[in-house]
Image (cartoon, rainbow, N blue to C red; front, side):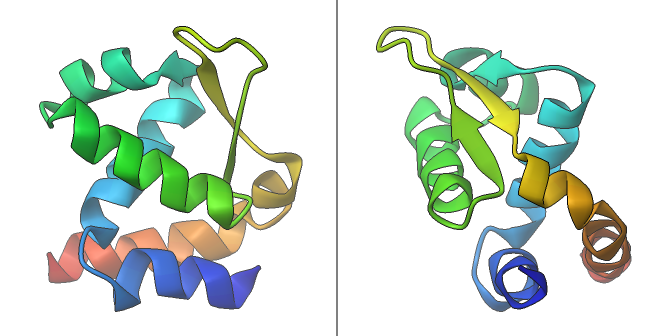
Amino acid sequence: MEKALWYLFTATRGGANRVRVVRALAERPKNANRLAEELDIAYTTARHHLDMLCDHDVVEQSDEDYAALFFLTDQFERNRDEFERIAQHVETDG
Protein backbone atom coordinates (compact mmCIF):
# COMPACT_ATOMS: atom_id res chain seq x y z
CA MET A 1 0.00 0.00 0.00
CA GLU A 2 2.91 2.37 0.69
CA LYS A 3 3.93 2.34 -2.99
CA ALA A 4 0.35 2.98 -4.07
CA LEU A 5 0.13 5.96 -1.73
CA TRP A 6 3.35 7.49 -3.06
CA TYR A 7 2.13 6.95 -6.62
CA LEU A 8 -1.33 8.43 -6.02
CA PHE A 9 -0.18 11.51 -4.19
CA THR A 10 3.24 12.37 -5.65
CA ALA A 11 3.84 10.66 -9.00
CA THR A 12 0.68 11.71 -10.83
CA ARG A 13 -1.04 14.95 -11.63
CA GLY A 14 -3.79 15.67 -9.17
CA GLY A 15 -1.95 14.35 -6.13
CA ALA A 16 -2.63 17.52 -4.15
CA ASN A 17 -6.35 17.29 -4.93
CA ARG A 18 -6.38 13.64 -3.90
CA VAL A 19 -4.85 14.65 -0.56
CA ARG A 20 -7.71 17.12 -0.20
CA VAL A 21 -10.24 14.39 -1.05
CA VAL A 22 -8.81 12.07 1.60
CA ARG A 23 -8.77 14.84 4.20
CA ALA A 24 -12.42 15.67 3.43
CA LEU A 25 -13.46 12.02 3.69
CA ALA A 26 -11.58 11.69 6.98
CA GLU A 27 -13.96 14.29 8.43
CA ARG A 28 -16.99 12.24 7.40
CA PRO A 29 -18.15 10.13 4.44
CA LYS A 30 -19.47 12.13 1.51
CA ASN A 31 -20.94 11.56 -1.92
CA ALA A 32 -19.15 12.78 -5.03
CA ASN A 33 -21.40 15.82 -5.50
CA ARG A 34 -20.92 17.06 -1.94
CA LEU A 35 -17.19 16.46 -2.20
CA ALA A 36 -16.99 18.45 -5.45
CA GLU A 37 -18.87 21.35 -3.88
CA GLU A 38 -16.80 21.32 -0.70
CA LEU A 39 -13.47 21.23 -2.57
CA ASP A 40 -14.65 23.62 -5.31
CA ILE A 41 -13.79 21.21 -8.11
CA ALA A 42 -15.87 19.87 -10.99
CA TYR A 43 -18.01 16.82 -10.31
CA THR A 44 -16.17 14.90 -13.05
CA THR A 45 -12.84 15.78 -11.41
CA ALA A 46 -14.10 14.56 -8.04
CA ARG A 47 -15.29 11.30 -9.64
CA HIS A 48 -11.94 10.83 -11.37
CA HIS A 49 -10.05 11.19 -8.09
CA LEU A 50 -12.51 8.95 -6.25
CA ASP A 51 -12.20 6.29 -8.95
CA MET A 52 -8.41 6.35 -8.71
CA LEU A 53 -8.56 6.14 -4.92
CA CYS A 54 -11.05 3.25 -5.15
CA ASP A 55 -8.82 1.43 -7.63
CA HIS A 56 -5.98 1.55 -5.10
CA ASP A 57 -8.09 0.59 -2.04
CA VAL A 58 -7.82 3.99 -0.38
CA VAL A 59 -11.57 4.65 -0.50
CA GLU A 60 -14.60 2.45 -0.96
CA GLN A 61 -18.08 3.23 -2.19
CA SER A 62 -21.30 2.36 -0.39
CA ASP A 63 -23.73 0.03 -2.13
CA GLU A 64 -26.18 2.72 -3.21
CA ASP A 65 -26.20 3.63 -6.90
CA TYR A 66 -27.51 7.16 -6.49
CA ALA A 67 -25.62 9.52 -4.18
CA ALA A 68 -23.34 6.73 -2.99
CA LEU A 69 -21.14 7.67 -0.06
CA PHE A 70 -17.39 7.22 -0.12
CA PHE A 71 -15.44 6.03 2.94
CA LEU A 72 -11.77 5.56 3.73
CA THR A 73 -10.91 1.86 3.75
CA ASP A 74 -9.61 -0.08 6.71
CA GLN A 75 -6.46 -0.80 4.71
CA PHE A 76 -5.89 2.94 4.26
CA GLU A 77 -6.49 3.54 7.97
CA ARG A 78 -3.74 1.03 8.79
CA ASN A 79 -1.41 3.11 6.59
CA ARG A 80 -2.55 6.56 7.70
CA ASP A 81 0.84 7.46 9.20
CA GLU A 82 2.49 6.93 5.82
CA PHE A 83 -0.24 9.01 4.16
CA GLU A 84 0.40 11.83 6.63
CA ARG A 85 4.13 11.81 5.78
CA ILE A 86 3.32 11.89 2.06
CA ALA A 87 0.65 14.57 2.49
CA GLN A 88 3.06 16.77 4.41
CA HIS A 89 5.53 16.43 1.53
CA VAL A 90 2.82 17.30 -1.02
CA GLU A 91 1.43 20.22 0.98
CA THR A 92 4.87 21.79 1.54
CA ASP A 93 5.97 21.36 -2.07
CA GLY A 94 2.64 22.45 -3.54
